[in-house]
Length: 89
Image (cartoon, rainbow, N blue to C red; front, side):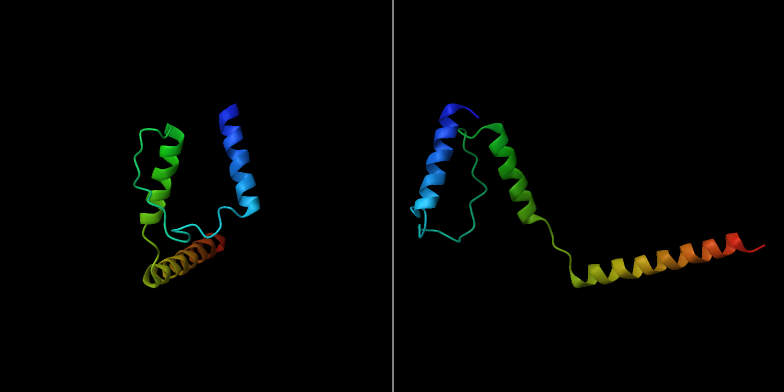
């Protein structure tokens, strides 16, 4: 981390500790992750892109969970049958 970034981080940490960042407008609202600022470095842009993709990722439905559970049960039964057939003389 360069000196300027370190100073910035220290000032932000001090402001958080002093409570200067409490009750800001927009607090608790989602961030606009579609920001494509040319001033952002590649690492920051990549991080924003990953957060944006994670936010848009579909969540599992109850039906998906039931289907996975049924498939696990079928798989376990098939493995049990296979083991039984191997041990028979």
